Length: 236
Image 1 (cartoon, rainbow, N blue to C red):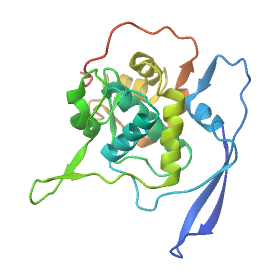
Image 2 (spheres, rainbow, N blue to C red; image 1 turned 90 degrees about the vertical axis):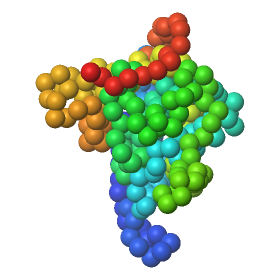
Image 3 (tube, rainbow, N blue to C red; image 1 turned 60 degrees about the vertical axis):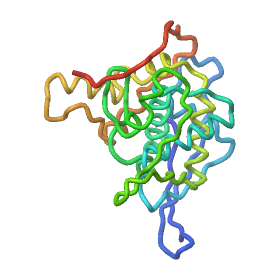
């Protein structure tokens, strides 16, 4: 693991006890050819990051996707559906590696082009390979009326989303897919498992992400394929 962790206890504003984790960033060599996704995000921190995990639990994945898209608009970054899936996945995995509860509820699944969250897929699949312009909405359970999804206010979550966009938002969907297909990584492990264990299906459990997220690599000069990624599909 690229960062050392040191836990302490602190009282939150409601008087309850919340876990606080301090992370010390480390420097990687200037001539490094490959770097861990988690290590890269850690390097973006200029000082020790002290974070208090959200006692409300994981967020609606569509709300996290909306937050990422709002930040991308502010940074003038175009995000396609397949890129959105990978960026939210990287944020989710990094948060788990930092010792926090899961960023999003539900499970990512191993699809042809890497990890996909079904809730995000349903909300944004209509965009195809074009930059996403719409935002996901919720629905009133009684009336069926569309409702806006509240964006997370946690400053640690917002900082994480900015870091992910800064590090990976300008990469092509092909390169993001390549990173998510890392040998030994969560997607790769589940893909191999589905060939022999039909009971597992194509879910990527958080414990597998936590165990294998370190295998994701960024290839600094990797060749990018031509063409657009239009659609994804579950592994069969």
